[in-house]
Image (cartoon, rainbow over all chains, first blue to last red):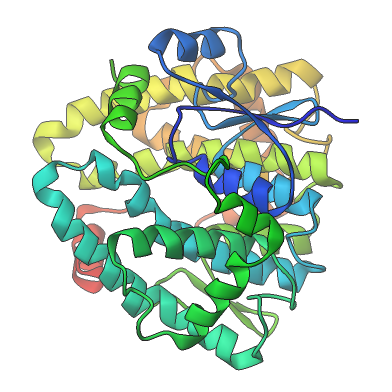
Length: 222
Length: 172
């Protein structure tokens, strides 16, 4: 039996959360090595374990994967979450890339100066409601299926669900004008592997707090 | 799709998102490796290149008082973080291309990046002989050679005027 994937990152969401979501959705159990000090990061760097001296890094199948998108693509492909053919794969790529653009300010938000944070929440809400959600609402309405592409769960659905839930934490009614997305996200949350990930005690990380912020500053910007 | 460009109309589709467009073209033209493992290596190398590319791309937008610091960052990242990785890959297998002994999206994007670095500061390439050899080799491929000649569809580095126009169109 192959060893479980091992994730290297601080104990918080950041760029690794999408990987946790995807592994969980695919029903893959994984281990985590939390970075808490600068020394731990340097040990990984000096030992040549990080291709570009950065995390996220995932040890999987005898390899040390870096670069979030590469990690996501590898896991998606391995677990049949990347479409059946080039056309489906391309749609999944386009949807995922758009969603990652929307997720990026959410990842960066805790690191903004406190006085800029409320304005940025409004900005994210606006982007979601004006630019991104209409696209996915139209796709779902167009084919009437439960998933964005090919009538089966894919990387695109997992990343979109992650992003919707993260936005809802800050803007509870962000899906108010999107009935198809509302139904879609409820259905996804009921998929057994995802349901388990959403329960207490799972490896899903809570919203960033002061402890997480301090850890990130200690490890990356001492 | 997302009210943004780039957008490429091809094969009856309107493709958006640079990575999705590149991946589609690369797959279609056998420039994306022969299996999952090769694709993974191509992906990891390419993502690193994109990170460096983005930093250099933003150089013209840097305010004049921050330009020196930005150049220092570009210099450090190029020489210490990114180019050594690709030089080491080529050294480790001694082949002509980064992955699978065959031209791929990774080689093409690396050569594009090397030309960009050269235009910013040619001395940054000095300690990377294998990368220079790759640049020459890829530049001599017939299709690439044609693209590098005047009159092709290759675009020049942005001038201050082009940036001002872009600012008006994209409102930033």
